[in-house]
Length: 101
Image 1: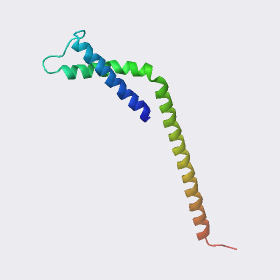
Image 2: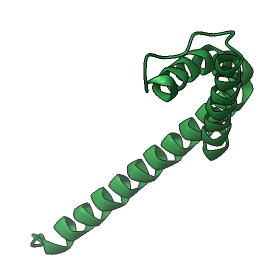
Image 3: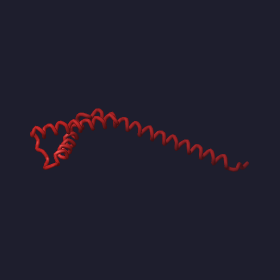
Image 4: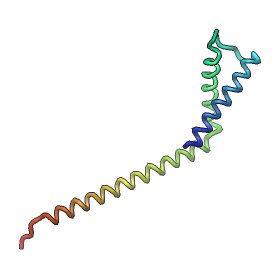
């Protein structure tokens, strides 16, 4: 998951650099007044989203698989813990019952 996040951030930074260069070369319009960096940043986010969807598909799927495996392990541990708790509760009940003969 950390790898996907780092790659996604790197793609945003790379997009920012490319778009900033294109604005400086006047191939893309600059923002109004002092809003140039805001314009470049927003455009970088918009451009990097579909790029990450295509370029980072494999990394994203691996991260999703890791998350799903963790969820399943946690769910199994919770079920096992609940079963142990039920057994301990049943043992305590049977130990405390009076024996009738």
